[in-house]
Amino acid sequence: MNTTEFIGTLVLPGVKESVGLARQYATSRLMHAGYTQTDDAILLLSEVVTNAVMHTASGQPGGAINITIRVLARTTLYVEVIDDGSSSVPTPQMPDEMVAGGRGLQLVELLTDRWGVRQTKKNRTAVWMEISMPSKPDEEK
Ligand SMILES: Nc1ncnc2c1ncn2[C@@H]1O[C@H](COP(=O)(O)OP(=O)(O)OP(=O)(O)O)[C@@H](O)[C@H]1O
Ligand SMILES: [Mg+2]
Image 1 (cartoon, rainbow, N blue to C red):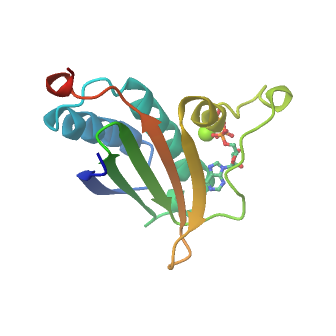
Image 2 (image 1 turned 90 degrees about the vertical axis):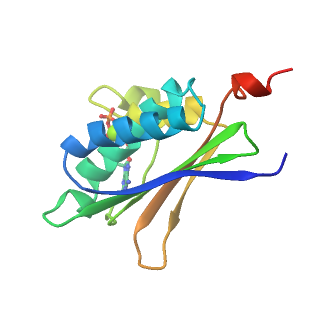
């Protein structure tokens, strides 16, 4: 079914505390909408929000992070995290470069169906991910 279900959108300051708040918000909103098997999505959301705090201007004083969550066709979770931009580009590291980090986007590669990066009109950076989910229990035949 070709539906898009809006789950929520949230603006947070670019501080470490926001990672936990983003997790709580996403878990609560998805649960309210009837989606319970969201562990992978919540893990990836944490990684991408952490990256926004650590690697972009969102982590500077006054910086912000915008999160949007939707469910596509009842089975695919769409998560988008917009940061305030950076001189670097979100790039998954090769395994031999991962000694001191570089695990976040490797997990994104591994656990998403698709993901990508785009610049917004305001020159912010959007990292988006599509993650498959089991359908809601009440819709299983
Ligand atoms: N939103 C972003 N904007 C710009 N650059 C980014 C962004 N997210 C990640 N990057 C770049 O991509 C690299 C890889 O990100 P990744 O999350 O895989 O590793 P890490 O954050 O360096 O380490 P870890 O996630 O294991 O703590 C980062 O080191 C950073 O240079
Ligand atoms: Mg990271």
